[in-house]
Image 1: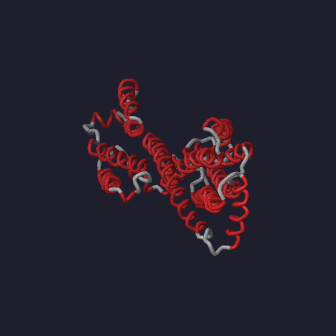
Image 2: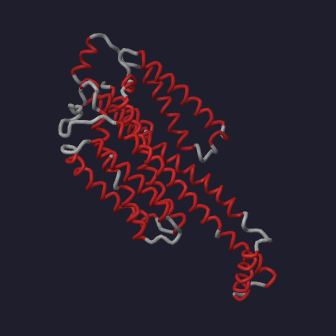
Image 3: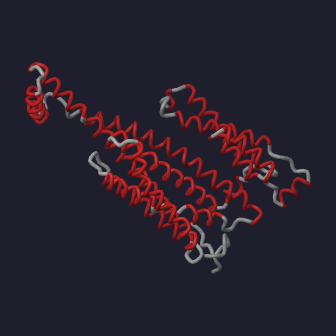
Length: 366
C-alpha cells in the first residue's frame, strides 16, 4: 500500500477508530499502488512496520494528551505526563529511524527542502488558525453572551459559505497569480481579522456583529489551503508527490488538534489571571466599590431583601460580574496571540519559492 494511504488510515484511526479500520480495508481493496511503489516491491523493499508502529504510538499519545491535557491539568497529571514522554520519545525515534530507512513511511528527508518545510509549517498554522477560531467563537457566544447552540451555529454559517465560495475562485487565481502572493495576502488578512477580533469581542456583541466578525475571520483561509499545497510541490521530484500530499494534509490535521488544545488552555489560564487582577479591585478600601455596593444595596433592599443582608448580597452581585469580564479579556488575549502568529507567517511567506502560475508545482524560470 502507498505510504500516503497508510498515513491517511493512521490519521483517521486516531480520530475515529471505526472509520480508520473501514478506511484501511477500503484502501486495500480499491486503491492501487503507483508504478514506482510496484517497482520497489519488486525489488524486495518491505513495508516500514517499525516506522508505522512509532507513528501510530507517537501520534496516538499526542492526540490523547492534546484532548485531555487541559482537563487533567497537564503536568499535574501523571497520565498526561506519561503521554507527553511517550509522544516525545516515539516521534524523535520516528524521525531518526525514517531518516536512515530505505523506504520510509514518512520521507523526513523532504524537510531538508526549506520551501517544503515552510509550507508544512504554514499548513500546520492554517489548521491552528481555522480550528482555534472555530472553537473560540461559538464557545464565547454560548457561554458568555447566552446564545443557544443553534443561534451560535447560525452566526458562524455565513463564514462557512464565504470559504465555500472562495475555494474555487482561489483555485482559478492560482493559474494567473503566483501562489506565494496569495499566501501572503491570506496571512495578512488572517492577522488583521484576528486583531480586529480583539477590538470587537465584548459581552454586548450582537448577532449581526458576530456574523460579520466570523466572515472577516475566515476570509484569509481561502487564500491559504490551495496555494500552500501548490507551493509545497515546488522543487520536489515528481516521484515524491504522494509523500508531499500526505505530509501536508497530515500537518493540517495535527494543527487542528494543537490549535483546539492551545486556545482552550489559553482561555482557561488567562481567565484565572484576569479574575485575580480584577478581584484585586474588590476590596473594602475601594471608594468606588463601596459607593456602588451602597447604591445596589438600596435597590436590593427595596425588592424585599432584609437590610442586614442587602449589602452582602450587593457585594455578591458585583463579584459575579467579575468572572464574565475576566473571561472576555481571556478571549481577547487569545485572539491577540493568534494575530501575532499569523503576522509571523505573513513574514515567512516571502521566503517561499516562486511557482509558475498554471504550471502546477514547477518553479518559475528566471
